[in-house]
Amino acid sequence: MSSTVPDDRDRYRRARRRVREIQAFYLHVAAFVAVNILLHVINFIASPKVYWAFWPLLGWGIGLLVHGLVTYRGSRGMPFVGREWRERKIRELMNKDRRDA
Picture (cartoon, rainbow, N blue to C red):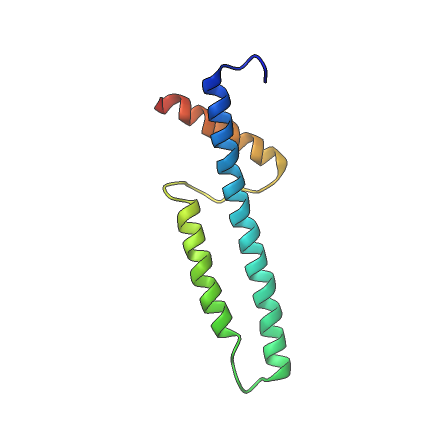
């Protein structure tokens, strides 16, 4: 990257930070799903007459919704989170930044 101009380096840093934000949201979604499945299983095994697993689902769901809204302020789609996707997203955001400049 030594041959890139300062603008490209700045765009790359911003795009890389954005990709990390998106990836963090996907990890949050995965944790939300896994933990809430586990809580529901525990709920229905330990105390099937009292449905308490709804409350953490609701509270965390609101937090996840806010995280999603902050992450996708104006963004489109929900792509995959692999390394190739990260690099493609970084290039996309750098190009968008170049067009907006």
